[in-house]
Length: 233
Image (tube, rainbow, N blue to C red; front, side, top):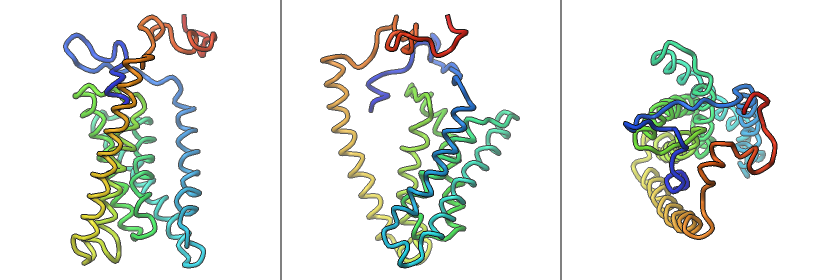
């Protein structure tokens, strides 16, 4: 909702509505951030398994988490190579994060093979969600929606599919998948409604976006009074 209300960056689309590539500033720092997130997820998933120590879940949760992240990264590398004959670092990083997001809901309840499948599907969904969002003019500079929104939904559904007791693919029937689907619909309805009111209220009162001049000059200069990059003029 924030990206829809804010609108695309200046210059993102040409006169015919086709998206232009606006490259990132520092892939090395982005890569470092990805690795910090990947490492932090081992505290996030095993650490939030409340009965993990009692039932020995922490190790399996950590392995499932890592398997999904690795498989998401690998499938993204392969897809980028098949698409452009280049190994795209940005897509690879987002593939790993997509796997981490997707495995979070089910990490304590599924097998490692199901975790790998979850990560592979997460990487595929992320890869194809990026051009889809560009086509509908939702400008997401860092790929947060393909990683978190799309794979948050996929990961929630994966519980209903791969849960080793209640999952559809393991003889549990449709009940768990129905519960997961209801959760997605409920959260989506609440979030879309409340954030639409919030962002539209800000837009029509104090304003939601900087001026065109400030955007073109860069917020490092207009907001902080410094240039982040010595070669920028």
